[in-house]
Amino acid sequence: MPVENWIADHLDRLVAFRHDLHRNPELLYDLPRTANKVAEALRAAGVDEVHEGIGKTGVVGVIRGKTNTSGRAIGLRADMDALPIIEATGKPYASEIPGKMHACGHDGHTTMLLGAAIGLAESRNFDGTVIVIFQPAEEGGAGARAMIEDGLFKRFPVQEVYGMHNRPNLAVGEFTISAGPIMGSVDMFEIEIEGVGGHAASPHATVDPMPVAAALIQAVQTIVARNVDPLDSAAVSITTVHGGDAFNVIPQTLRITGTVRTLREEVRDLVEERLTRLVETLPAAFGATGRIDYGRHYPVTVNHAAETELAALAAESVAGVGKVSRDMPATLGGEDFSFMLNEVPGAMINIGNGPSAGLHHPAYDFNDDVIAWGTSYWSQLVRDRLPTTN
Image (cartoon, rainbow, N blue to C red; front, side, top):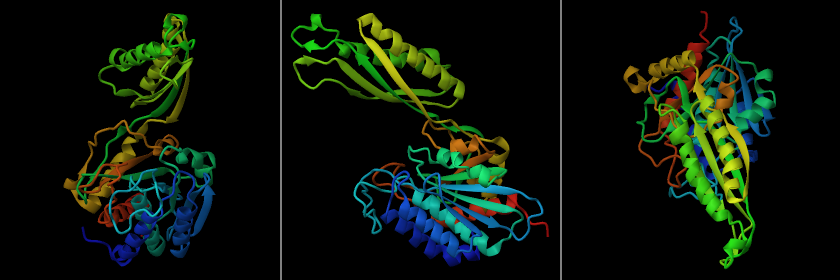
C-alpha cells in the first residue's frame, strides 16, 4: 500500500500515541486520561468542534469539509476502554497499571480514528461533515448506548455510521466484512434456587438445592438442542455456581449465573422464555423454588447490506480487490456498536492484525503496522461517502 504523504508524516506520532495509551489503560467509563488525550489531540489537529463528557466520558469531534452542498454527515466510531487483565506481552510499552491492559486493541482503534481525524482536518477534501466518535465502556458497560441516550445522534445527526475492529491472525493489509448478523446478542442471568437447609447427616429433613441445580443445569442444555432450529445459532452457558459454606451443612439457597448468546432477536426471545419457564417450574418438582433475574445487555450486531458493500469498496480502494472478503464468519461474541447500528444504517469491518494472540488474551498486542492501513481506510471511506463536487 502506498502510504499517503500525510499519514507517513504523522505515523511515528500515531505509534507513540498508541504506545502511550497502552501504557496507561483505563476501564469502562473511568477514562479521564484517555478521553483527555483524545480531546487534546483533536483540538491540536484543528478539528472544528470537540465535545467531551458525552455518555459520561465519550468524546465527539466535528470536522467540516471544504464544501457542504450535500448537507450530509457520516459517523466514524472507535472504542477507548481497556480490560481488567494482567498483561504478559513483555513489550517496552506494556501496561504500567497493575491488573489493566489493552487486550482488545482499543488503543489501536482510537489511534487509527485519531489519525484519520488529523488528516481530514488538515485536507478538508470532502463535501459534508464527519463526526468522529470516541466511545467509552465497550467492554461490558454499553458505552454506545450511554452516548446515544446522552443525545449523540440528536446533537450530531448522521446518515450513516461505521465501525472497525482488528482481527488477530488475519494478515495485515487485509479486511473482512459481511452483511447481516455478524456478532451475537449478549444477555446475562442470575438464578436463585431456594430449598430448606439443614444438617448434612439428615438430608431427608431438608430440600437440598444441590440436586435441583444439577437437574436444572442438565435441563438448560436442552434449550438449544431441542428448541432452537439447528440452522440458527445460540449458546446458553452456565458459568458460576455458588452455594454452601460448610462440609456438613446443606445450604438453604444456591446461586447460578450464566450468559445467553444468539444471532437473531427471535431466537433471543425464545431462549429467554424457555430458560425462565425451566427456572420457574423445574425446582417445584423437588419442593424447591426458583427465581431468575434475566438481563438483556447488547443486541445482535447487524451490518446493513448497502453500507456493508460501501465499506468493502472503500477497503478495496486501499488494500486491493483480492484483500477484502465479504464472507466474514459470524461470532457469538458481543459488540455494543450494535446499539448504533440499531439507530443509524452502517457497518463494522474487521482489519487484519497479523499473527497474534487472541483478543482478551494477556499476550495480545495491537500491531502498529495496522495503523497506516486503518487510517487510510477511514480516509478513503470519507472520500467515497462525501465526495467533493469539483
